[in-house]
Image (tube, rainbow, N blue to C red; front, side, top):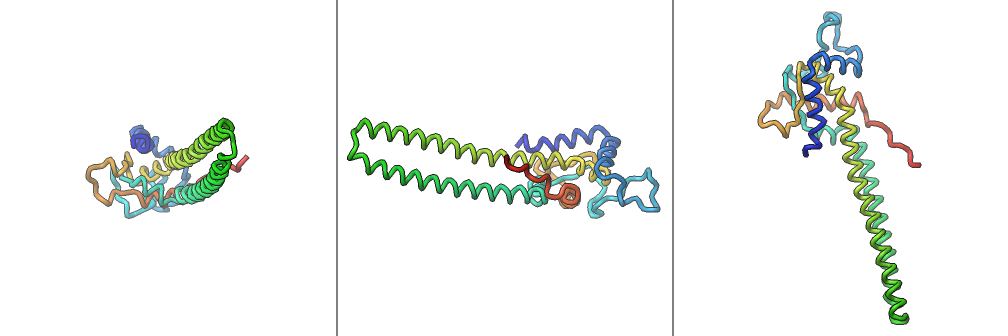
Length: 210
């Protein structure tokens, strides 16, 4: 849990550097904002991207929903579900093959010398152990891939978060699980979702397999 909150604490640390740092970061990602109308001077703050979100020093976010409902998170989850299904299909095939091999080995036992059968059985057991370890590593890699994609999303989200902070006069965005009580009006999840989908889309395309 502590690791998952780190990106948001990082955002808080950046915010504590002061409004200028946030404004510079936001400017690098968004350029000149469309909120500067003819009635605004260039020195005035940009108009908020979501007018329903109030000006507040503290905003909150549902981190899980932010990721799960983003285009990036949905793309990653669809890819991982496909890979998980492929792994399950592979596991089922391997299990069927090993079951058939085990049955064949058992049927040969009455016709073999005990020491010959023991050698074949030991070789089979060793191979099964190796296959199981390899498949377990593949499953662990999928879990690590999901965590890595989430952290990459949060890192990419920081400049967008800075933009929203600057627009609404906030100094921090807190994970709502770390907040005891907060008004629902300061929940920036929907505003961030809109900004992130526009800025990041579904995220970087996966690297081609070698």
